[in-house]
Length: 116
Image (cartoon, rainbow, N blue to C red; front, side):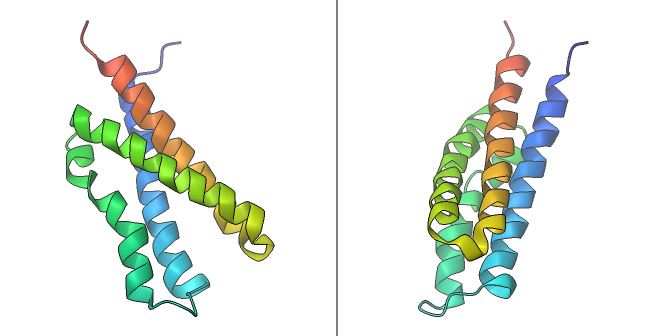
């Protein structure tokens, strides 16, 4: 059974929007920062996701590649956060999972939708 490239794209979109919602909820409702303003934290955590969003939604290959690169930042953050902060390990694990979904979805979509 061959998996269609569009299914990889949907996996990437699920990871993208899941990561977006998780970061919004985590930094505003679940565990807002007590040392920094919430707006500043959101600016640094959400802005990198917004950069390739338009192209990702239009299935542009370059934006998909950039979304894959950007997802590695969130993977690194989730890994470090799960190691350092035991009380928020669940949210950090979700961040790792969603960033991997975004990375693998975009990478496999680009690989199997390429025209030979």
